[in-house]
Amino acid sequence: MSAATFRPMTFGVTRATLRESHNGVRYMVADTPLPAYAQRMTDRLLHWAQTEPDLTLFARRRKNADGSRGDWQHLSYGQAYASARRIAQALIDRGLNEQHPVVILSENDLEHALMALGCMMAGVPYCPASPAYSTISQDYDKLRHIMSTLTPGLVFAADAARYGKAIQAAVGHDVAVILNEGTIEGRASTSFADLLATADTAAVDAAMAATGPDTIVKFLFTSGSTKMPKAVINTQRLWCANQQQMIASMPVLAERPLVLVDWLPWNHTFGGNHNFGMTIYNGGTLYIDDGKPTPALIGETLRNLREIAPSVYFNVPTGFEAIANAMKTDDALRKNLLSRVKMFFYAGAALAQPIWDSLYESQEREVGERIAMTTGLGMTESGPFAIFVTSPHSRAGDLGLPTAGMELKLVPNGDKVEVRYKGPNVTPGYWRAPQETAEAFDEEGFLCTGDAVKWIDENDIHQGLKFDGRIAEDFKLATGTFVSVGPLRAKIIAAGAPYVQDVVITGLNLHEVGAMVFPTAAVRGLSGLAADAPLADVLASTPVQTHFQHVVNTLAKTATGSANRVARLVLLSEPPSIDKGEVTDKGSINQRAVLKHRDALVQALHAGTAPHTLTPQ
Image (cartoon, rainbow, N blue to C red; front, top):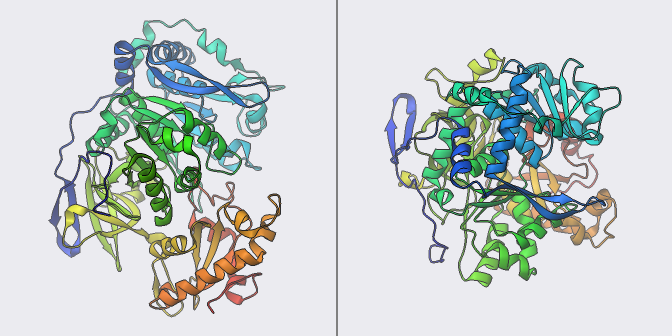
C-alpha cells in the first residue's frame, strides 16, 4: 500500500510526546499546539453572514406532492442569520433558559437548522431528540425520559402527522409546542411561520453578548446500553475547541470551498456536532441528504452524490459499503463523487478491509489515485473528535494520535489498555446526574472512555494507536480464558464480507465462543430468492448457509485457541431494535443491549437448539 498514490492531503498531527508514570500509566499529547479558537459558535455564524452573506449554508431538496424530492432549496448565511435572530427573539420573549430549554423533534431539515441557530443566539440550550424515539418507538419511554430529564419549556416538531402522537404521549400540556406543518387535535400550538414573523430587537444582541465559553449550547443524549440515555452537556467551549482541534488534525477542513453531502442525524454527535459544527465554523455548505444507508433510501444518497460533489465526505461503514458496490458499475457516481473529494471519513463501527479495497479500486480506475480513507476515535462526551489517523496509509482499526490540546491517559486494565481523555473539548458532565458525572471521571479528572487501545507499532509511537475493543464488552469463558471482543468481531466481519453488517460475540461464563450475525442486505442477492422473500427464508437458503459455513470453517482454521475460535454461529433475521437500545443513531450495534434482550437465543445457541446454527466442520 505504501507505493500507492494518494490525492494530496495534509495530516496536521503526526508526532506526539509520551510521558511515563507509575503503575504502567502513560500520558500522551500531540506535538502540535492548539491554536486560539472562537468563544462561541454564533461568532463564526456572524462572521460568515457578514463576509459571505450569499453563500449557501444549508440546502435540502424540496418535497414534491407525491413525497419525492425535487430541486434544491438553498438557505444562505445571510438568510440564516436574519431568520435565527427572529427565532431567538421569540425564545427570549418566552423566558426560556437552561432549566427550561428547547427540545427538537425533527429529522435534519432547514427548519431544524434555523431553530438550533435561534437557540444559540438566544443563549437557550437545545436538544435534538432522536426521531426514532417519536416515530419508531411504540412505548415512547426514551422520549419521556428526555422530557423528564430536561423539563423543556418548548418543543419544536417538523410535522404534526409524524410527531403528533409522540407529543400527545410524552409532552406535558404546560410545554409550548411549535409545529412546522399541521396541527395536533386538542393541542394548542404555534406555527413555525409565526415564529419567523417575530420582529427582532436589541434583546437578541444582548442575549448573544451574555453567552460565553461556559454557556450550555445543547444537550446530546447518549445512545444508552442497558440503562436510559444520559444528557451530555455541550458548552460553547467544548464545541468551538473541538472544531479548532479538527482543523489542527484535518487542515483540509479550512480549505475553501468546504462542501458536505450528509445524512448523519443531528441528534447524534457525529452529524450534529462534528459535521453541523464544521460547516458553520469553517464557512462551509451542507447539502442535507434525505437518503440513508438502507435498501429503501440509499438510492437517494447515490442520486445526491451524482449531482453534488463534496470536498470531504463522511459516512458509516454500511454507507461506504453501499457506495463501494454502486461505484463498480455507476459511471456518473464515480465521476462526480471523486471529482474533488479530498478525504473520506468513517466512524460508528469497523470498516471491513474488502470494502476499503473496493473503494480504492474504483478510485484508481476513475481518477488514477486513491482518496485517503480516514477515521479516529471519540465519543459524545469528547465533542466528539479526539484521535485521528496520521497518514493516508492507515488500515482498518487504526486510530492515530490525540488531537491538539487534548491529553490521553493510557491505563492498564488486565491485559488491555484503556484510553482516557482530558481537554477543552471534554464535557463538564451529565445534566442533572451528579453521580453518573462523578463516575465518568477518574481521580485526575480524565474522562473514562471504556475504549481499549494498543500501539500500531510499539517501536514507533508516532504511528499512534489502534482500536482494541470495548473493555466492558470483553468477558471470560467458564475456563477463565479471556475473550477480546473487538478484534474477534472485526475478524468475523472481514471473513464474512460483504454479507456481515455487525456481529455480537457470545460465551460469557460458557465453554465456547459464539457469534450472532446481523447480515447486510447483500445476502438477498446471494440467496437467489425473490426480492420480497422473508429474511428468515433468505438466511436459511442453501447459498447463504453454504457461504457462512465456509466462513466458520475458515475462522476455525486460523484460530489460535478457545478465546478466538468461533464454535457456533447463527444469522439473525430480526433487525436490531431502537426501542431496546440495540442500535445507535449512527448505525452501530450495542453489544450489551443485544445480549441482554436476546438472552434466550444466546442460551439456545450454546445449547445447540437454535435453528440453523453453524459449527466448524
